[in-house]
Image (cartoon, rainbow, N blue to C red; front, side, top):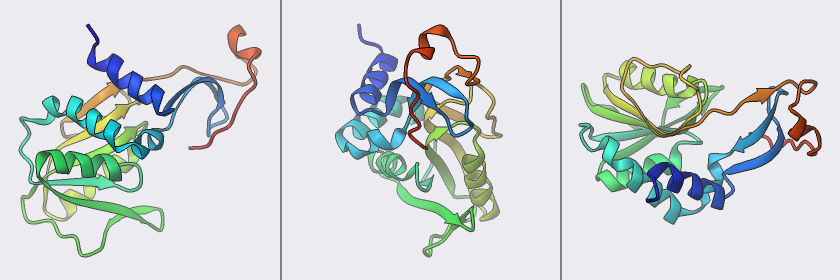
Length: 189
């Protein structure tokens, strides 16, 4: 029997969102794996399938609106809103902070599900949570395709993830033997 986790990983691998090799991370550390969710978001059939797989975790939440942080959460958030027949809005960067623009409004006590593609530290997700609350809304939960925080990102609202995935990282001068013979690649984030 094919598990949900295996199917999700197959989708990420087939769309080249999850790569295996020798990668230089933004921090300078090295990893055997690299995850770039934007790759899967090019393929709407796969995004639709991911949300179908995610939907059972979210079905008991009460929300009227989906809010996604730009850029990563846009495609995923829109698909969640479509499948739940919910209103869809987004927040975007302005002077390196997320803001609610474009005439989007949040009604008092409006239940909102925040949807993000990937969290590592959870900073942008927390900014989105704060924006909802500052505008009088209620956060029904935070839904992420991939939580790669290894339990380090915590929030004062329910957190739902389709996949939890953490990768070991290494200093360049402390690589495991199997990575030493593979040329390092810097893909960017």
